[in-house]
Each structure stands twice: as structure tokens, then as C-alpha cells.
Image (tube, rainbow, N blue to C red; front, side, top):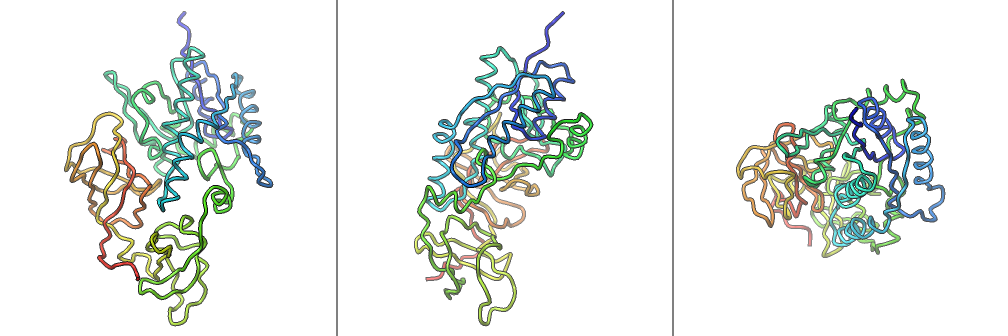
Length: 370
């Protein structure tokens, strides 16, 4: 009798990877779990997420009846992901470490362990789907559009995708919770994790301040009127409304304030009382060198794209394409294009790949206040 294929599953302690393991076992795979510790704990009071996650992953592995391996990739995470993360913030950009982490740490770690254990596949609890045909692999959006995580997988390679299994691709999150409860998994009601990949839910401003100096400066209107002080430009993003600390401004009315620009040269945060201010709207953008999971699209082809996770898909065209970068135009103006974030492209359900945004072309030619 032919032996069942072996899979190494990234087991994080969360409900998604736990249910992924249960579904793989149900499908007849031999499953072994891998818990990846990618951040060394620090002295932040009350923060010990890795210990709690590992304890839960152990409980899940016992419940599923699978071995659990543990590996420390903190040095790799720092070198391949976190150093870049800090460098981007230091120059006023807004990076997305989750995308880089999947390509540089998570999938290499899973594949390395698969090789060591003689496994033919790797798996995770990502909400994504795949199509394998004619020796190539396609990354597809998940059935649950609200949970789809192909945005974070846009930079994985064919070598990483070919052996990958995503058991949750055809399920809604509500179904995953129900399965976990029906199976009596110990984490069936555990809250979904948020925050930076492998760093977790901590006070972001305090955390980042340990590594980077963020001088405070003026908050001013687009007309140049100073109305407050910011606590470091790196802590603000285009379109942000919360946390500006702007009280009542004489003659300004009660409408909320929004970040419309960050003047890095003068260390000033520019705000306006208009959610769709012209400085926030872009008809297009330019990127750094793109990554294509399989084949690049055709220049000028009508595609779907998103410039942030969970953004509704937008109609876009690549009007100029080269190995050095892309020029993209949108059918509708896009709000709050953020350099350092990524644009990810789709053809129907298929995720084609993406690129880091270098800048947007604001619809307004209004100069920043002097």
C-alpha cells in the first residue's frame, strides 16, 4: 500500500493553522507541525506572545496527534525582514513586513524542514488557494474575500508555491471557527492575531522608538498654518484620522482632520479637513522592480489590483513595464497611496504578483506649505 504524503505545517497557535492541520489529516496526509519563533522576547511588561502561542501550538498538536517541532529564526527575521523594515521607516516610507516575511523567512523555513523530514509538501493556515497544472503553480484568491491573504503572498516564488497547500482556501472564516469548535480544538475561540508579522500586538509607537529616533515637529494645514505638534512623522500615514491630537482649531469648524502629506524635508505633518483632499488622491503610481509569481501580464491589459490588504479590488492598467519598475494607472482615483506599501495584481481569481510602491501621482499640483 502506498504511504501517504508527508506535510510540514506551520503551526502558530492560532485557530487557522489548527484547522488546516485537521483538514490535512482528514485528507489523508501525514502531518508534522513546525512552530517558528522569529522574534526574541524583550522586557515589555505583560508581553509574552511567543510563549502563549507555543503553549497553544503544543496543545493543538496533542489534540491532533501530530509531532510538533520548534525552531528559532530570530536572526534570519532580523537580517532579512526587520532591518529593511527599519530602513524604510527611517526614510519616511510605510513598509509591509508580512510580505517580505513570507518570502524570506516563513516559506524557506517550512521548505527547509520539509527537506529534513522527507516531506513532499508544506502547508499553512493562510486564506489562499492554488491551482497546479502542467508543472506550474498558480496562486488564487480565497473564497472568503474578506479574509483573503494573497496580498501577503504576492512575492513567493514558484519553488515555494509548487509544494504549498492552503487547506482553508475554499472556506469562510465562520466555517473555520465552526470546524474548530466541532472538533473541540483548544483554540476554537481564540482571538485572531493582529500587528506586525511575528512581532505581534504591542504599542507600536513605543516599540519603534527603541530602534529609531523620531523627532517631533509641527502639524500644519495645507495653507501653512501651524495647529499642533506631531510625535514623529514615521508614526503617521496618508489618510490617517485617529491619533493626531488636534483639538479645537479657531475658525476651522468641527470636521475631523486627516493626514494628507508628510513633508520629510521640513519634518512637518500636513493635514486637512477633507477625507478626499486632492493631495490624497492619485490617478496612478510608479513602483520598484516587480515580482511575478509565474508570467508577467501584458502591458496595457486591464487587471485588478489593490494597494493595501482588504482594499476592494480596483481596475488598473500597467502603462509601462520593465524590470526596473512599473507605471500604473487606475480607472478610479486611489486614496492614500503610500510609498513602501505594495500594489498586488490579479487576473480574475489569480494573483499575478506585485511590486513595492515608489510613489503616487497626486491629482493636485498644489505644493506643500512653505
